[in-house]
Image (tube, rainbow, N blue to C red; front, side):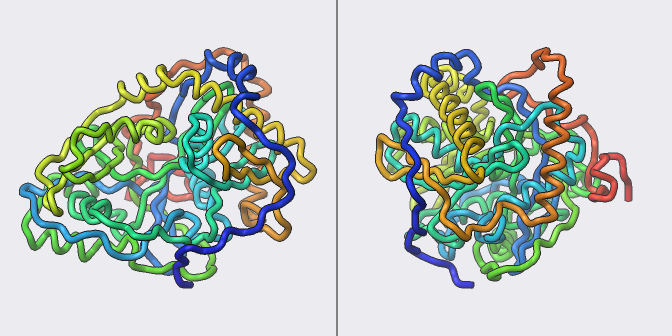
Length: 437
């Protein structure tokens, strides 16, 4: 199926009500003390493989930061870039790969009831709304089990980003390397759980890469190769030729293929990357990205400045303290976000069929609408049954919780049991971390 540029917006359902930030203020006041991220941990991850048929690899791994020894002239971005990589590759059920990864890597349900499942896009759009940023969006809101799922909705699952310019794709292609165990990957997706505003949230986000010096021991297969660097022009050409993040167009519909491979990377090693022209130096680019990095709890930021494709100023920053500072400064806005999430949860749970659409076209109002008939369920029947059982077990565990508050704070990570190696594991062993080849 061909990519779609400028697809018409799908029809809207009947409007049920509107939400304004003003009416959220009273509820927000009561949530101010808990409008922060705590108890953050990585529960699953996966890579999209660059194949025509939808294929994922889990746990996968982000690309490793392997900067070139000397700057070279890079070509400008070209190709097809999808707005929503998950929907483009699996349009029937874009959130399903994340759930499959959770079921495989975290078969034991969480100890608390999951209130909301979202992604960086849906959480980010709601945050933009309460901050008064003028950006339209749509998302589906559906109850599975007793958990509200917020699912991104573009005009078309394969809607593309028009007029892509610059070096935001060729620079990471030249300066990062997929580990041999995940070679052929197109992107890396991560699923976090954290507490925010009195809610247990599960949030999927994309990871641009990881920093080797912030990792512990790599799996043996990768460790043998991690210090091998080849920064010649020939190596750069090979990297660019090997990277086909936007080259293989997904087929219209196909079964999701799942395989094991890769290794777990702690959140403390993950980075976000942005490229900018050197003529724009002096602008607060990090400040512009902090809301998104807060949603995804990413503690490292790479900002690369170029002059006509030659990158002579590349800054690698630990921004964990800046993310915390931003969170403290934005307490009012984050309290509004918490109140909005509670409001959406109540509305969807109380709706006739537990399915709504959240729509924003105007600056002030957020519209709550009925979903139009004929939309697919969020998951295939088999995965829906497994996921409902997992969520129900988590809710059951929560009933027996003593109520003691768990330790942890924003950007204080719990990423498994330290030196566990999942490379040889599979779904059959529930990713025990103890298998060997």
